[in-house]
Length: 238
Image (tube, rainbow, N blue to C red; front, side):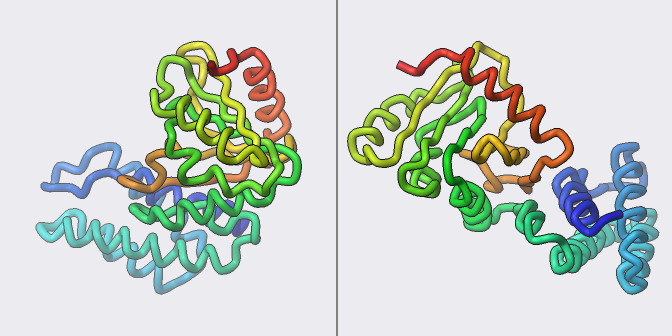
């Protein structure tokens, strides 16, 4: 497994971690997750982490299983830290740990700040916080396009955009509404060339559960083309 793949895989396992077991009747979901954890830790070739995860997994079958589950999570975070040290620069920061809203802001800000010509934010649940939190992150003069869902967009977005246009004329923003229930992903597209997927709505990023920002490489051009078509077909927000 390549370093960036390992880094993202560990982050994903932290994100989807099931609840800690309460008794010896371990769920199928938990056992499947434990198997994935064991495999990715084995891939690290770190003997200490492998020993820690093996002992913690064995502990799930005994009365102190809640503590053992916590040790599994601690080992995963150790592995995440090590993986981040050797991951490529463009992969670092793609996993935003639980509750760390400042790091979430920092990661998104860095992505938006890299734009030179255009930003497209896709999120079915956009509200005014997208401007409050991220409106000033793109370089001045770079247009920011917001694509959201007409059925789930929050009422606070339209008046916020109107006020933004008056106060910041050098930071152009445009909002379009896609037909109801046609948007299912959250994504960030930079300069029609770079695509990022986001596992949570921008307004909730890393507030209650782990979030992940992942740069898309293999299918980036397909995603960019698909969402550009959705943008041009969407209705201009009044």
